[in-house]
Image 1 (tube, chains in turn red, green):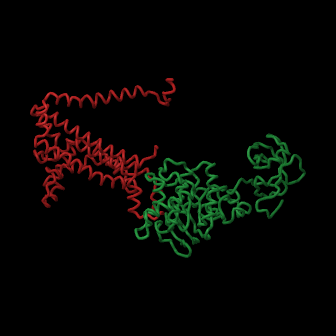
Image 2: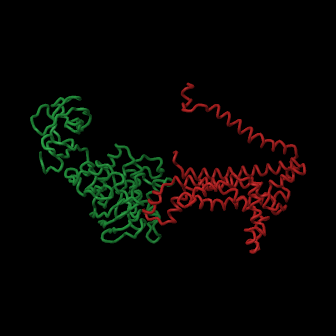
Image 3: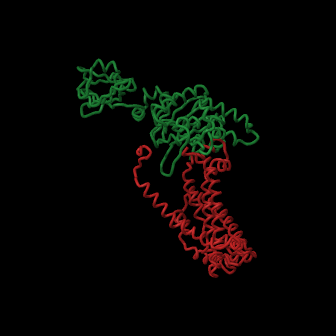
Length: 280
Length: 331
């Protein structure tokens, strides 16, 4: 009976690898995260409520989710264009550009933050032009958006690229021979197939932006109520030995992010089920 | 809709895909473009469809020059080898696509579109798959959907690029006959590309044999098979043996069924050859014989001839061509 229920596979080791996965997840993700809850549980509910709903904390959530969303949106748009260009056209230095896309993954984020802050400061190479227009780029929410856009760029490009590559040009030719114009071909034939990967890229860029700390602290100016993000607030609380207060804010960020990610994933599943029916 | 192709050329970099092609396709004709890969047959089809632009030359649809018209405006139905169905759309939406992208002024109402799609689905005998996705269908079904999709917009001509190339042989055979009947009913001018000579001969009214960007011969299946214009066509259109006679050194092309096999013969044109391969499974008995100078001779016999001769592998027999390709000269 045992043999029947067990499927034979070429490479063995299901039990071992699953066990390893569980242990790995436990040690690396679950245990550290549960420490957060453990730490917070030491404070009463009213203290928790007070720490997490303080006006300064609320302002930082708003800022963080706002800029993360905005930068992910920017990345979704421009990352899509970058992926499109990289897949569809041949041009000199294409390979180098393709490698450059991954740079934000590799670069220490603090380095990115310092470089961007220097560039966009009112006297910087780029910042001076913003300054002339009376727009403050560094040390403002705009600066944070710039940093987060830089950090999140690879996600959309790298999720959309392979899907775009998988679409044969015949699909577009079929649409054209059926009388569709370019916009209709893009809108009705290409975009629906690309959308799930675009949404995945958006989600990754968004969550990466929510958690970003290194680059933001250098370019944001860190003014409470204005350009202070929750991770910085947490750092401030830690420096004041307010460990449970720091944990409380962390938990709010954690749960909200989790909820958001779950929602986007569900949405994505709903969309992909319609699109990628390949496995049905 | 007749099509006239006038001195159309096309190169891809150094490679000359088409060298000044001239061809006229009559209204309602079912034409096969036959050739090995790299012969330019698909390029020619794509130029007719407007999916590829010609370097030089003209294309007329019923006298109207379309060389500068894009694929979108040529009103051509195109069927791809790998179906090119829209994978995120149901079968119904796939077929309706061409009707729905029409400008508002000429677009049919949703109800009319529904009616038309249902009609097409029953025409291809697939009414029951309207709500499925292409991935849920077999290759043969997908190709019929692709055909229905192309026909939905009532194209002026229908172009098929190796339409059955990706299908297994049984389905391919069924679809060939089906396409033949289908064309007979609709009478739409149809051009299909194939590298399979059997397919070209079985389905088409006329065959255009292409090689290295040039037309080798245009003719009915019977003409190209029995009266090939040159050795390329003779060799490409079916198994053939370049037979060297024993008396005069003249070489002739002989098809497998044109040989006569005998146990004894005093005919000076017959050669003595050993049967090295014998396959009696099938309507014809297929044999390969090794003649003088190890010349390979391909022979097919009817089952009754085979039974009468009681041939065995390894046996030495006399082989003589009863007739040769072209049929004009006899040895």
